[in-house]
Structures are given as C-alpha cells and as structure tokens.
Amino acid sequence: MDGHRVPRADRPLDLHRLQQFLAVAENAGFTSAAAQLHLTQQALSTAIRQLERQLGVTLFDRTGRRLRPTAAGEVLRDGARALLAAAATLAEQTYEAGTESPRPFVIGHTPAITAEEVYLLLASVRARLPTVSVTARQMFPDALVHALYDGQIDLALRRGVAMPAHLASAIIAYDPVRLAVARTHRLADRDIVRIDDLRTESVMVWAPPGHSFYTDFLLSTCRRAGFEPRFVVNRIQGTPPVTAVADNDCVAFVTAPAGPAVGGLVRVVELADPPLAPTQALWLPHTVSPVRDLLTVQQPTTDAAE
Image (cartoon, rainbow, N blue to C red):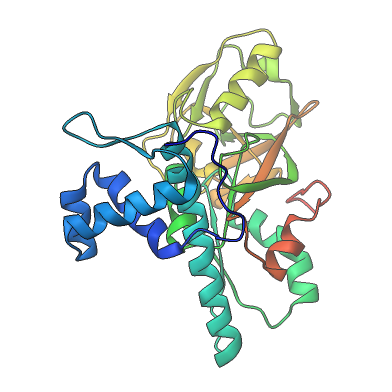
C-alpha cells in the first residue's frame, strides 16, 4: 500500500465492513470468518482489500498460514470493537426513544465496590432523574470490559486508575479504607488501628498481586508503612468483602462503615490516616447518557457511614 496516501475524510468507515474486518481478525483467517458471516471467502477477501484501499494501509500479514494483523490492523481491530459497540448502543437508544420503552441503565461493579456504595453514588441520579430505572450487577473485573462491548452493561465501576485503551474513564469517588476482623480477633476491640499494626497479620484479598488493582493498591499501602504483607486469597468469591474474615483469623481492608457487620460475626475498625481507594467508571466512547453524565461528574468522597 502507498504509505503516503491519506484516507478520504468524506468517506467514513462503513460499519458493516468493520464487522467483516473484525471477524477476519478474530478468526485469524478468511475461512472461519466467511462461514461466520455467511459469505464466500472471495467476497470477504474482496471486501477487506477494498477497506485497505480506502485506508491506504495493509491490515493483514498474509505471508503465513494464519493471517496476522499488521500494526495498522491492530489499531483498527482495537478501535473497531469500541466503535461497533457504540453504534449498537446508539441504535438501541434511538429505538427506546421512539417506542417509549426504555430499559434499565445497567451498572456493573466489582466485588471491591459494595452495592451500598453504588447506591450512594446514585444520589444525583435519584434526585434529578427519579423515573429512570437502574440495575446494579456485581461482576468480576475480567468480565467488565467484555460486558461493556457486548452491551450487557452501560457503565462499569471498579477500583482502578489506569485508563484502558479505547474506553472512556473517570475517577468518580474516593472511599476511606477500614479494617475488617472477626469479632474474636485481637484487634476487634480497638477503636482505631494503625496500618503498621498489621505486620504479623494475614491479609485477605480477592486476587493475588499483579491480577487486581485493589490488591496492588493494598500492597503499596503496606509497603509505605514499612512492611511486606502476607496475603491470603479468599476462597469464597462474590460475597460482600466484610464476609471474608467471618470465620478465620485474617484481616481484610474494606470500605464498609465502621461497626459490627455480618450479624455481629465481624467488626469493622477505623484506620489511622486511612488510604483512599478510588472508584473508576468505564464506558464506551462516542455514546451519550444523561445517567452516566450525572454519575461521572466529580463527586465528593463517598463515606458509607454517612
């Protein structure tokens, strides 16, 4: 392809052709992609050639047995997912507006963000859009991005700060971290605990370091206090974070309010100079939503004790 050729601005990308390109990229070849799209291989190959001519770049390395995206193809592949998902969302919103049959606004959130915290974040939505229905759905972190692309959720909430490629994001709240312990734990009767009091404790987490921003955040918090924490991965996933220490001698960093929890089996204790855990919202770019706009305006620190 002519590397000096600039794509024509008056010929925007065809979404149907983008779907064809994405099928080829994800199947690493024309045979499976053509079968998936119910096209002949020749028709699909011609469509990809036409897309390459329009863009002025080669999208696939065709020298091996399997097609591999070029650097340009990787950029288009990653951007195509977000663009196609945004187009599907726009079509759905247009239908809902024309038929007066709106569906709920669906929020996916990781277990590190409690349902109560999601409710508190919705204060402005409840006040200004009282007729809008919202559904909160707990999901594991690895599933959030796929759920956004697939249209299962409209907004994702997680503990994180990194900006993912091809998604829009914003930090919308900071929550003070506290300590959860079983009622029989040696720290259960304390009014306040210092982080360096935990040097000899086993800290319950939901994923090992390197697999969870929240775990990495807690690791850095302990290291700043001058010690290397001993982590234990929770064997029961999907329940409220405070339950992680109900039947063991571990401690857990949580954002639940101070006081008794889990029917008195657990006590949440304040931390001295508590770290603030960020709540990050993720959504599809090129989409509009009044609910999301209210949620993603910078909000004050959320404190579940209020």
